[in-house]
Image: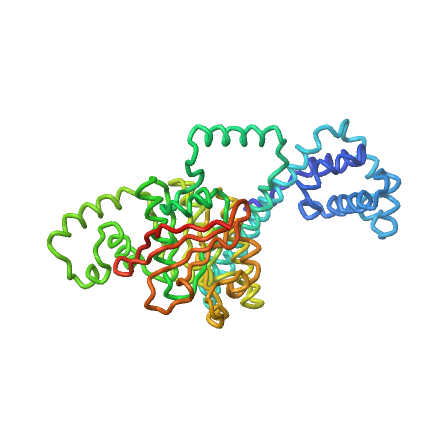
Length: 438
């Protein structure tokens, strides 16, 4: 049986080291590409690490200084002595191609990591006491870590950014007042935000039973039905059947309870049929996995983006997502919030994430939410580009149908408030002709 060696490229490793010893400035070009752990030969990894140490301490990096450092570490003989270091220099005619050498080293390193991951997963799969969900979560987490190390973004020259900015400004100038992002369907809110922007994390927070699910679903429905956007809804609280009932109720204009209990007048059935046809033609996707992990959510969103395209993600709601951090609830929610922002950036879509508010709001006479009321973690406020608060007007009791939607944080624009009316029968919202900008 032939024994296969792990992927490696020793020539590339030596070429990287030789290029550095020829020209220490080469480190600037490759420091973001490879680390000492990426070298298959541990001796080469030790030499690279020592070169980085010298460079970090603003010392010359050459055969003399490197041999001195290795001698102090009592490792000079282990690496092959001064002769081996000198041979490294003579083996590379120029440092011009050091980045290409480094990428070859990185590629084989990533391949070894994938092989190691596969081997570990195979062993764990035989452990009967290991939960399948835990096994899948560990596999996904490890793959994400590997992929993140292989896809780091680089500088973009300002001229490129200016061209993009000019094109956006020119397009908006042709259509003054046009919504630049994903329209919400609420004109006053769109005036404040310009729609939901790509790569933004938008937090919609409220106390229970105020209507945050209904409001987010109204936005998702408008985006998918009216603007033909591809929308992913992750519903951790309600089943897909419950959401479907709400969507039909909104689209038809029939009472939600009447729809669920079958108390529908005959005249509404043609409308229901039309609404079903219209909704079936949209690119609205619902995932109702309860207790979904943040890694699984990210993976599903990425897959949908690749297969169908994606314009917007809705998450209902943030505190029900399972994170990887088991140190405490605050740390777990902080990690989830950070990941959601990362998903928005990576997929270049707005992520609308619902969040619970703490009970502190109920202790205030006016009932107005504050950013400090965001439940379980202060990092939600930090990670969010926009924070929306949905509350009963003036803190009125549960019988009040008037709502205030406050834009409490807007990283790139104005804050303000929009007055809404909650149509309970159809679990949808309508704008009241009042709009306040701060």
